[in-house]
Length: 556
Ligand code: ATP
Ligand code: MG
Image (cartoon, rainbow, N blue to C red; front, side, top):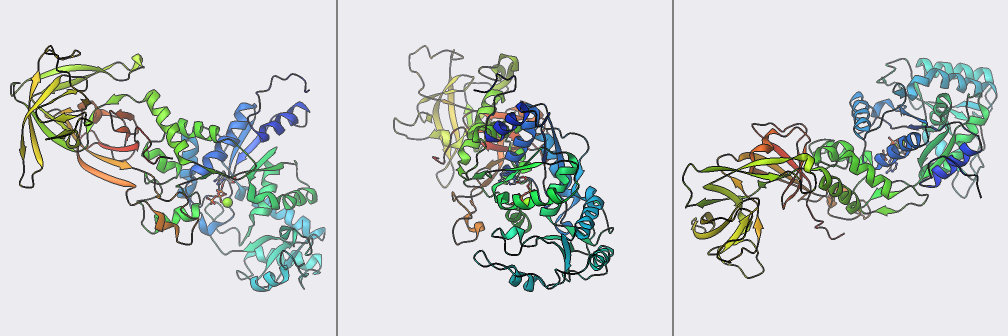
């Protein structure tokens, strides 16, 4: 039995190890980092890593750094750095200190590379990429030593300096660690530390003609920052011996520890920046923050609250075994969050005119309705009611069987938050489609049943026509219609859901919705949760996105 502790209870194996480290006094406080490569926008998979790294620091009184892992200048852009920082803030986390960059450590990393050369533990190798592959061996066959492996320290130092200055053409030589070409772990077969790249870097400009590899830069950056727990996904497990080898060989100021956890994999979703970039570059979506995209910026725009994403990550947990998580779980977290907080409102997406003929032409009466069924703090809203209304085309039938609980010719329905009406007549167009419903108001039915005892069977939503505001509403759904879009033989773009986006231009909103702030969320009664588009919503021309329908229609 361990001694009683005042530390918060661990939620998963990484926190269990951390608590053990804290209790044993091996560390004073955790220092973690979130290390994105700025070569695309963050996606829902990154949210898991963000919640894990920042969450641990928060829960156990530590710090979490934001460090751009920017060692690959050709693929990186300032646009991505800015978007990533903004997404992390939006997720509700604050990094400790300044934004850090692996490129900020290039001088130190270079000095340590020289140190390895001086110790006889690194050498400049001139094998071509193809030759290097041959020399590397296979999983079942040992590799062979490079003919350049025994270069003298002096020659290596000079060649390395030349590479740095830009004397060597790209691909002509690399700096490699001298470890073991027969190691069963391929990562230890003299891995590359530096490549020649005559590229302009977004942070360091043209100062460097060589760039370190992830394997060389990452652990040393962790050490420089005093990271205690370097958390990464399982595919780096085989790199851990190399991570530790560098830390043993170099005079680093700290000894971080790498621990791996399972990536978040979601069905109906792609979590690969490379593939998401293809969707953007090839025009399948409008951009990285298209509301269909599983990027954090896309989910945000669609109307997924950061709190829901955090709750989802917490519920999904942190494990050591890969598994596939149901995207329905994320959607359910979004419903929960909005259900608690989103004010209710009425909007008609496919308007059908209703004329209540017994009301005067200019009759307008202001009704009131609660903004939320359980949140008195949100107060009441005022709803204009009058002779001309819109209802959903789908909520009216000339004839229907008993199961249909909406408005039928000759029958009654309750208008949500208002009166009972009875349909008396219809107008139709040449194609037989109903264009207008004539109705009468059943008197004294505000908040009570009709006095004649003929109760309506259902309740439908509506918007008064003169005050109603025309709007664009986008129905957003899952981006892919296949549970595992990248599992089969076919290209993952074949699995795109053609119905992921439906744009409706002629919707009508209750007037208050026009005043919504960008990103403000509402439940449109009976229709789902909608947010005012972050970029395009205007009071004069409202634009709403449906984050999620009220109920799961995918049957997950
Ligand atoms: P991608 O394959 O999408 O490019 P990546 O791992 O190359 O992902 P990075 O920018 O290097 O992207 O990732 C930053 C951090 O986020 C890393 O620590 C990485 O392990 C973590 N991460 C990336 N994808 C996931 C995921 N699906 N689940 C959990 N963590 C992830
Ligand atoms: Mg990466």
